[in-house]
Length: 371
Image 1 (cartoon, rainbow, N blue to C red):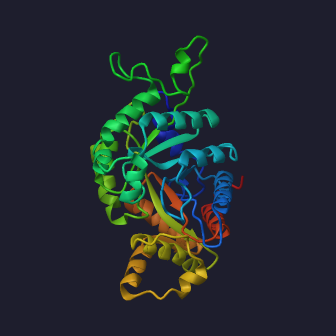
Image 2 (cartoon, rainbow, N blue to C red):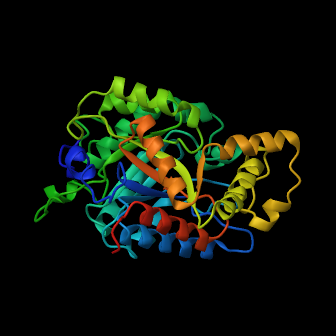
Image 3 (cartoon, one colour):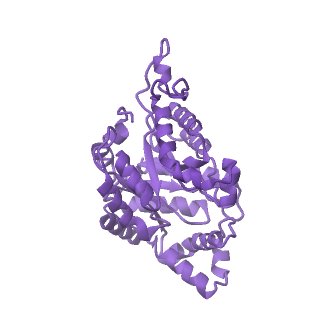
């Protein structure tokens, strides 16, 4: 593992010291680039640019997008493409993947994509990796061109090691890949007239269970946990990560980020109305009927059965929503309960304006700077 990356190696000083107003930990953004009913993917991408620029202006620490496939309501199937676009519309906020699903791709391809992103936005690109497919089994098979899907997950540590060596250009002599180089990358510094880039994308491991928590800890990598859809596993996974942690060249102590669903509105009723759109969207996804994010009126008129109502109530129990003060209190409580070092907020709502408004209200509640 390269020891040149200051963003991760100096986590204790640089990230924890990030400007955050009165927030207990740095606040960041996870954007699924959702497509609401009546809108297009182009609308969703424009909203993503607006959210990234708002997050940058208001002092959020980083902005990540997540790889999903075959979901009409989620336009983030190509994180590297989206991040290149967002890099052109921002100047300082960290951009990254939350995450790229490593088993779906050849490690060399990811190293090349994120080396290119690093060249576009030097010093502000994160490479978060997951081992799930980000979709259903049939779509995963189409992505990977194989029916043996379990092999991708089982081989994740080996794939991660290969990706790391491509990023660091560090295959040993005699390895079959020793003469293969990810470009852009460190090999350019060893070519005649080459200059070493001071950065390479730092690696993060993502997870919703204990596997990636233990692996991230054993490798001394930062860990991002999907609290927003696996809340019951959050504390056990973070405990496992911290117990498994071994200092590395890039991180001297554990650093845990958690994704959290949160939406603020000017009043409780409006916040509830907005988050119901995300709840109905998730219900449809979990019952094999993924679609566009429904409008608030459609969600309000939906005839929930008793089991569906139970699902929605349980789902919303882990979505922090309400007035800015209510959301602030919920985020504060979550940070205290989990000991997370960073909170990454994803806003569940149909419309772009409502999601943008939520991030502004949360920033105001914490006194984040007006850029």
